[in-house]
Amino acid sequence: MIIITVILFPIVTIVNGEVKHDWLKAVLFSLSVAVGLLPSMLPAIVNANIARGAFALAKKNSIVKCLDSVQDLGTMTVICSNKTTTLTKDEISLHHYLDPLGDESTEVYRLAYTNTKAQGGKKNGIDSAILKHSAGQNLDELEDIIGEVPFNFETRRSSCITRDRTGRTMSIVKGAYEDVIARCSSIRLGAVLTLDEEKRQNLTRKVQDLNPEGYRVILVTTRDISEIECNIDNFEGLNISMTVQGLLTFLDPPKDNAKASIARLQELGVEVRCLTGDNVGAALKVCRDLNIVKKIDGESIQAITGPDLALLEGADEFHSVVKHCKIFTKLTPSQKGLVIDSLKRNSGHVVGMLGDGINDCIALCSADVGVSVHTGQNVAKDCADIILTEKELSILVDCVVRGRTTQGNTIKYIKMGFSSNFANVISILISSCWLPFEPLTSLQIFVSNLLYDISQLTIPLDDVDAGYLATPQTVRRVVFSTTAVIAVGVAVPFMGPIAQALDFVKPENTFWGFFAAEMVVYVLAVEVVKWAYIKLFKRW
Image 1 (cartoon, rainbow, N blue to C red):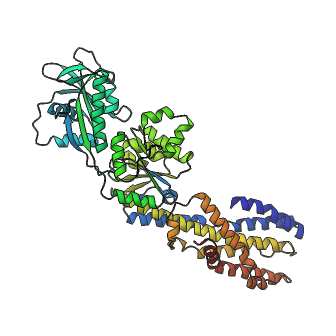
Image 2 (image 1 turned 30 degrees about the vertical axis):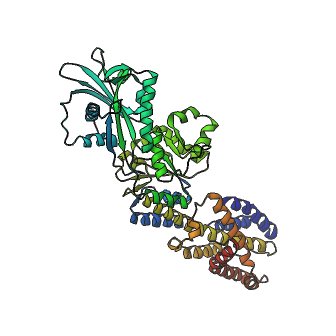
Image 3 (image 1 turned 180 degrees about the vertical axis):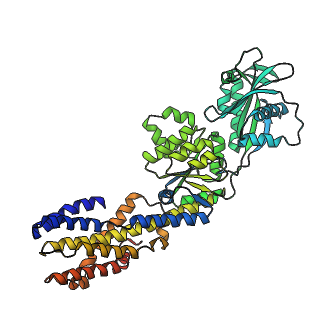
């Protein structure tokens, strides 16, 4: 619109100046035409549309913090989601506590329980499951807690230091298997033995057998540091040369309605991708159950881990992998943000992010639309644009449909307003070529545009065709459809009845003839252009 306005301004000025030989009036008239070309009620229509969309979403258990996000939902092509609590029930339960031989071991559980009790602040899902599992069990009296290092999304482990009655000081660490096993040098197989490559591979195979069943596996390790002088304010460097004590397995099943909601999003043309800090096996199990990935294709990348993705950072292959991969596992918070940025800038997607944890904050801020839930971390809700008041993916489907309705009604006004204004400006420009006077005064142009814009204030209440709601509407489609309507609208002022209404002999007749013609155009434009557009393009 701005480009066309800039082009028409000098043309109208030159034509009027040459015909009337009054360049000052020509410039003023051109300014009036330029202003009349723009859909002046667009801000009001957009705000009314967005406000109505936000009000409608509030009825569907969604709180809109950023009003612009309502329209962004309509153009969204990819939704990235955290796995835990968003795709799953957030009912993490501890299923096994095993020693390295695969036998159940209460000692492994006691060590994990001690580590969990030492953690201050709000407990995460894993810690809550460990504490909940202890109900009714008689645990030995815990050692004195000297200090603790809380769970870190970069290191993917938590640790504490304890001292028992004999004065022995011990470090207890639990965390993601792949990250913690790399810091171990021994393993308890009855006795403490050196962790050689064979023992490491045997333990890894046990973990790999558990992952396809959907289990999250946590490794529990210890280190006797009685003979080591340590600083209780900073003992992270002690988490090396540890002894493997055993494994914990956790299960968090998918939500009951998640599969149907994801299928509906896919029908609406929105790709669903999973961004998680969990291991590959557990993430693949959930995503296959929910049909995020539907089949195993040996030639395509279904999942990639954070460490593997880190090796590609800065290379073109990074963006190619992000474009085609649907499951990203063992991601750090910063890597989630990088994935979102790559999808936006290099793949051309409009990206939404659904998450509720501290580790999702960077991604929520980077996404075009950030969505959290009311039970999420406060900092995640602060970063989100929309907050769901229930943990149901079906609400997100309603949000997408409402967003497209809001965007569709906004585009309707742009189509109608700009095409009608453009058609009248063209007719005025052509008439100016042979008339020795202005076909319309500036005031008449403003009045006619104002009357038309007032009549369009009900557009936010309009319905949107099902065909428009079926797919994301990108900017290119909007430009094409608007241009198509303009092409139809240009013909309206030159239709037989309107052309006959113009009398090019007397100025007073021309003034009122043009003004009357504009009013007729504005009255008929909505139905005429809509009818022509449906006939030509089979949709509106």
